[in-house]
Length: 204
Image (cartoon, rainbow, N blue to C red; front, side, top):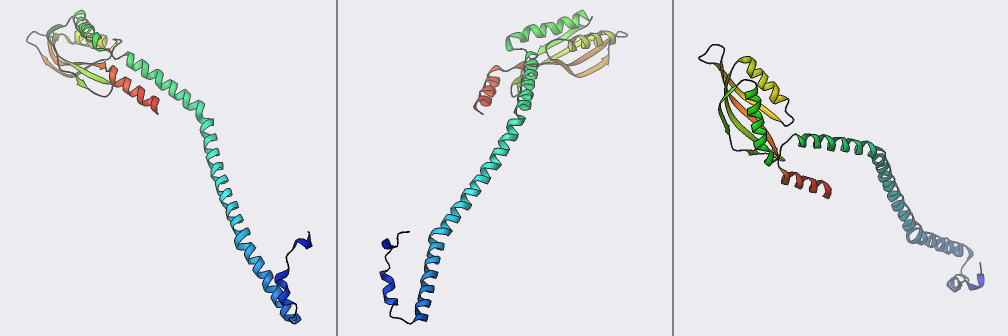
């Protein structure tokens, strides 16, 4: 340290004082210097270090979380791909609007091939859901129990989804002939709603 560069003029008033007063004065000066260093230097530095440590700990927590997510990412991607595949299969089972007439005609042919006689086949107004719409048809058929079971089996084997619901069965006038009323419901794929859903997934 270059002592020549130090300015000690502030100590000159202490020179004429008795020794004990000089010692007290020096002790006070040292305390003031230490206190100034503590409040102006060391304490702000310590606070800065603590803040940096808190930020480092926060970043460490975020890093661990991201590492867990990254480790789980292949499984999530596989699950997403599986769900997407299942969705495509399900959507392929929902006919488009242009395919509805052919599908309903297939239902009538399934009934006729089973030996049933259609007294009523009346399409009703469709009911829109989220990405599909229900297309109900009121049906009334005549035939035997075996013919009815064959018809239901053939409808269940169709590649497109058709549900026979709300069946009401009563004995007809002729022996062994049943009069059956109910609804044949198919489900139409709504292209616009699905398109909006895909855009929403891409934005996320």
